[in-house]
Image (cartoon, rainbow, N blue to C red; front, side):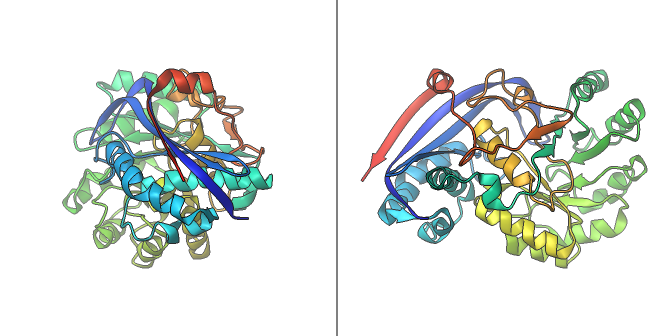
Length: 370
């Protein structure tokens, strides 16, 4: 049912990471989070904007997301006054792009809507599982011994899937060493974050002997045809991440043979409603999906875990326990149990904010009312 909005709060929160995460494009030691809170006549809801500190993963970054929310998206949302989360895209359609900013608002609105209706997000999305397989992403390290120590620690914790960040100069040797040390039972994949070119096909083909689940986003985000050509040269399946910005783009990527797996990140496609459409398109095409993460706090992690419980999420995603990234989370922590994370069943996102932690790490707050 539609909810009637009375206000919106934008809160900046800075959380230190337990260990820095390095990719081929950036290195993060803390998470600057834009937390969204919506107030309605029946319930309040919480959301999280996944935009990173710098525009390196995509064109979006947290300061830009904050600005576009404040100046353009929140006024339009409040002007709509009464709406459902599924109506949000139309209400904000006059603002081009800024999918991560819109996704943060949609998450908060959906949380409020479902709390008011007494329905869990997982049930709303169509989840079929009560727990999901966890996976962990391991950044580029300073040395092979450091990498092997980190992977060993995560395997000991119970993670059954490990994703290694790679880039030119850090690819075949670390993958070979991890596979040799931890064996064929470990689900292993790599994420290149767009750091290769089609001319590197021979180098990427050298990863084929290691039986990787996939190579994620080896080429530029807009290079669908180049990915299709690369797929013909490799035995290892290609997974697209940054390329997939909507269900329509997912359908195009599948149609041209650019991808055999799709990484679904709700923030990247504009929110959970569109993420469910991406899932459905891939399911209809027989293409499996996995759920990606963006250094999410417990707010975004709750949404990801619920999404990953849909039936076509057959590959473990970037769904780690809270302590992989944060010593203290904004919600009660997600913990690993037998290699899995429990899907929240309470109404809305199904998590409770730790308001004392939130207050301690807040750097600014803005409120907008009708």
